[in-house]
Image 1 (cartoon, rainbow, N blue to C red):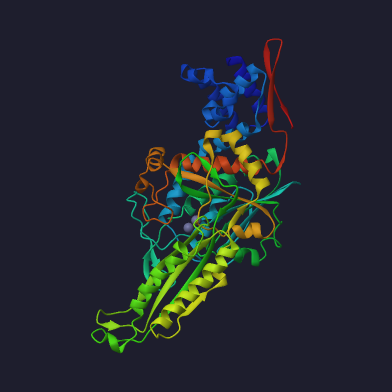
Image 2 (image 1 turned 90 degrees about the vertical axis):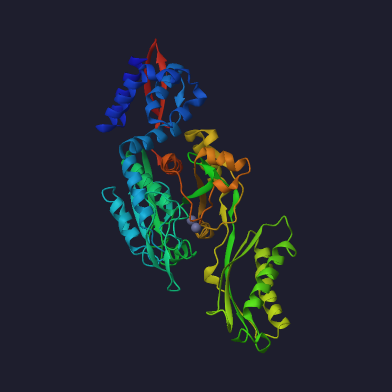
Length: 514
Ligand SMILES: [Zn+2]
Ligand SMILES: [Zn+2]
């Protein structure tokens, strides 16, 4: 075994690895023959992908393949490439994550975040264009010969939420929101995780550019949380001023799945989003003389309950629909009936026909409540700029991506999940006619996921919760591994497959393009 491993390491060193990489493989080979390598001796060939998840098992996987006269899959080697980066730089990635988590910025205010990402890409060879698309967007391009163009997207913005996780690296940042209120700010949607994985993937792919051909476009978009950033970048010329991608990829945290897993949804993955504002108008006056007024607080309360019947009574229960009244603002003093109350709603649908019916229903009910109380007509605003279309994963691209993820990460780490009623303006890239796929990244401790599956949902805070706290390891590592695999699977290949065969009892390795 020792000679086989040594020989393979020498071949690998000569063929693809230099300096520190060869040293890592050598160290790995040493540990591979130590007593600690015992369990891996029994690894069967179908388990090679799983074994190669761990860099310390890379040489073992290759050696087993050599002895068994089988090919080590491209996926296993690609994961090992990502792991080499992670072995050397994982502590830096954690630092990056904590920095981003501590310093969140609201939508369209991502100035420091954007500058930080530019710095993180220094030395990679990516050519970075800053201040693109709404002021803070980044477009980083790495041209590496003829081949497909692949776009990888991250988002940069955080939410007006005061963090309650109790983590030592919690955000203490405060700012003013768009209404001028002082609010805590938090990366409660995991965009800090996405940015960290984006940086790790960029470094990994840049470091192995002798193994692939094509163009990478790594973008960091502003203002995802308000559904505007992707559209702003497209309108500013993302696909005309830079190479138009053949494929678009993105990751998003999945708070219901275990860290170390990647989940995916074929076809429709996330919902249509619409935001609606309703100004319920009345006639103000003294709280002690309600009969002299038309009370918009009471009308609002009535309307909020009426609106729920759009979901519970007017909609087919098998057709997903969410209607949430997220804000109610009205009045300044207990004994003063105000002139008006403002409601803000989010509406989530998966079918265009349902979307149209519900938006019309909201307006009908708001007007109906006003008529019933002889109140002035309400002002219902459905701003088309606040609409985000549903995310629909390209079936061919998704199947191809899932296949390589299963091969590289192992079947049990790649799971299908149902569509969710959250939204993502990543959908805009697919609407431009580019094959696009959004993958989900598990973020929770496995024991909590098990508790939730047994019925205790309280242990898993949702996205946008002030207690949302992704587990750093292995979430960040899995994100880098998964995105590296997904990109390498799409760009042009150099000779990247290692096969092995036995010749008269001695083992040799050779590379082969497939
Ligand atoms: Zn979000
Ligand atoms: Zn998000």
